[in-house]
Structure formats: C-alpha cells, structure tokens
Length: 86
Length: 159
Image 1 (cartoon, helix red, strand yellow):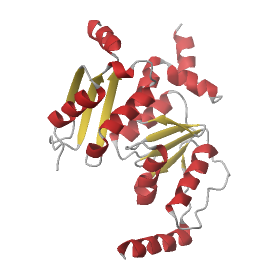
Image 2 (cartoon, chains in turn brown, orange; image 1 turned 135 degrees about the vertical axis):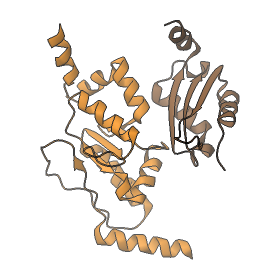
Image 3 (cartoon, chains in turn yellow, brown; image 1 turned 90 degrees about the horizontal axis):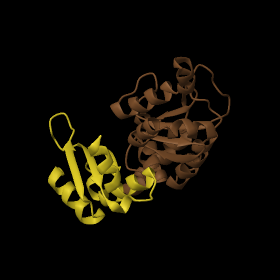
C-alpha cells in the first residue's frame, strides 16, 4: 500500500508532538515512493541532528519499508521561527 | 525450508567470493586487504561492517560509484565531499550486493542509502551531510579526522 502524505503528517504530529509538519511527495509521478518532510517539534530541543532524524525514522519505521527515500528537515520551534523571519 | 535453501545459497556465495572491495574515489589506492567473509551468518556481515567502517577515515555506502553515482542522494554526498577536497575515501556500492544493502541498514539502524561514516562513527545520510556542510560542522568534523577542507583554502583566497 502506498503511504500518503496525510498519513505521514498525522503520524508525525501525533507521535513527535510536532507543531508544524510539511510533507511533500517528491517521487517523479507522485507515486508516494519518496517524500520530503519538514518537522517542527519541541522534542528536538537539545538533540543533535542525527538523533532528531532517528526520531523521525523511528516514528515512520513502518512507512519506511515502502518509502524509497525520505528527505528530512528537523527544527525546534525556535529554529522554525528564525527561519521564517529570514 | 525456503529459509534454509536461501541461507545455503548465501553460504555458497560467501564461500566463493564474498570480499568487499571499496572503490577508491581518489587516484591513490591503499593496499590494505579487504575483510573476508568466510562464514555464512548475517552476524558475520555485521562484524565485517564493523571492520569496514573503521578501516578508512571516511567511508560511504552508496548507490553506484563516486565516478558514476546511480542516485541523486548518493551523488549529493559525493559532490559535497568533493567540494571539501575529500577524494580519498572508501565507497561501497550497495547495488552490487543485496546483502550489503540490507546489512548496512541494520548495522547503522538507518533506513536509507547513502550512509557516511567518519572514523567508524555513523555520521548520517545525505540530508545530515548537507546540513553539516551548510552550517560549517563538516569542516570541523573533517579537521578532527586530520583532513583539511579545501573550502578553507577557497575562503582564504577570496579574502
């Protein structure tokens, strides 16, 4: 079963208490084979990038069996505000 | 039953020639002999991987080769390393070996390829390397490995 962007968004919001999530299907024909996600969560605070990505990977472990590629951007709410103002 | 046949087939293949040869990105070739996989359990592959990532300062598991990457993300890793003047690293093409492709994901507990290792430590995939490149961490991490990033020279010249 192909994973949908909505499903991925819901899961990230629920499990990582994300305050903002962008999910983009980056597969050439929108076939849900690769995704790009932006996750903003206070759970990322004080954690290095590798650990943040691992949290997302763990959250989407089931989905990743079907997904070929997952691009991630993981920000804390503070980093997100800073990025928005730039 | 199927599992037994599969594992037997793996044994036979492993016995025949399961020696991983990294492709050298740079012109210089090191003469260290690659780890040999003589037994047939997946545990041995994990042990081999432990040796493979420590054998070279910079190790990349990728799709294709540095000269001919077969995936955009693997290509991005090659290009980032090239920008920093890192041209001597061990690159293992996971497309050559399905067991290696799956084994390295288990080894690092990381679901995707490419995977980058510095001094035996898992660094991350394409996104993480790119962000380390952007925020300057990569220059620092390379320094810890005794590698002087070529970008530092470029900076000096432009000043």
